Amino acid sequence: MLNRRSFFLYPLSILYRVVTDIRNILYDTGFLHSEKFDIPVICIGNITVGGTGKTPHAEYLIRLLRNDFRVALLSRGYKRRSKGFRIASQSSTTFEIGDEPLQIFNKFPDILVAVGSDRVNGIKTIMKEQPGTDLIILDDGFQHRSVKPGLSILLTDYSRVITRDYLMPYGNLRENRNNRKRAGVIVVSKTPGSATESEMNSITGELKPDDGQKLFFTSVSYGDPSPVFKNYASKKSLPAKPDRQIYSAVVVTGIAAPGPLIEYLEKFFTGIIHLGFPDHHCYSENDIEKIGKAFKDLKSREKMIITTEKDAVRLREFSNINDSLKRVFYCIPVWISFPNGDKHEFDKMIIEYVRRNKRNN
Image (cartoon, rainbow, N blue to C red; front, side, top):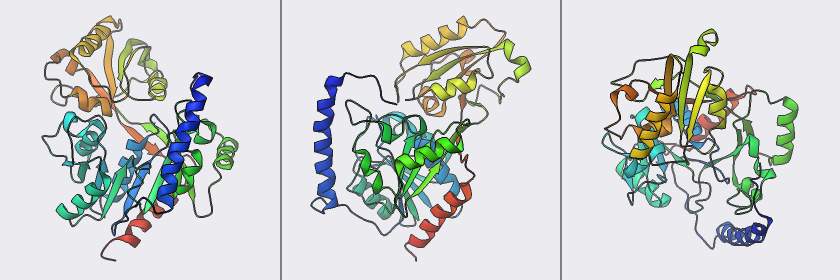
């Protein structure tokens, strides 16, 4: 869906297209070099500003591959305050590697998670320092043409498909929508459960995948809440429908599109106070005070504070949050599902690509 913006921005989007088109032509013609590696590199990215679900899809790939292959993930580490190449460790913070890489490392400590804005150098460093690595997942790398991935997965949000959007700053696209042809796989993410086969066929017709280009639809599923501060809270389920009238919640989000999460939680709580912050928000002492005040304002007998996994990694870095708040602080995990029942086809495609391109082959 196009944001409501001034039509006077449209000429700037034309200029933006000229610049990005020239850059892509220089890469396509070989004037600018794209480096290919002798290791499977799976790129997950988008051409849309805002969240399309890259991190949940990266986590899906990690779960799929980690038992049979030695997986590494390379991210830019958006909004980190460090420079250069870094490998995540138990002592890493969001200031050092960013919130999403730290989230992934905390969930999958057995894989290598690294950050670096220079993707070519990052891949070379991983291969040098961890020569046993079987594959690298390149997070948010579709625009980084200096690397030529073996398999490129492009995400587009069901509610704002790239064919219905415009280039920045008039729209939300970071480059020409026709460049979706570079992707080996297109994934229409965040497909609602109410989507009909006819609606999905319509979107498929708009995207017009090329021969050999795969297209999948995925949906977001939410798991049971888990404690943000594991030493303080106990495992807790969302209230059942008959009991929801006695439950309320403060929902804290610093993500690009919190709407689906709020809609999901409204099924369980009779009252919700939503404190929305910008994507990748760096929380302050003042924000913690706002959260505490909102929690006090809830009038129900049973109440919780709920946030996202990405926000949880930032909030855990506050050492002075009141213990009473820590006991009621929970985060909601996000899972990926395939509403069309083509999970097996997707999994098979990914696994076969990695096996076929492993270096020892």
